[in-house]
Image (tube, rainbow, N blue to C red):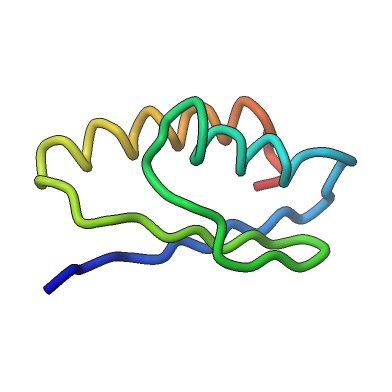
Length: 74
């Protein structure tokens, strides 16, 4: 049985291209997951189950990159 988790990221003041850059991080740069759904200010991403230690370090790196891309608007 496959297990996965979902993450929703919301931007308070979205700039053009922010959500595309976040999707690019998750699907290409850190190939951890895929975009599931998007609205004007949110993006939902799905992730396969990862080993706890790996998931923690990868998600910490991803969080830093998303903050870099979207800044305080996240």
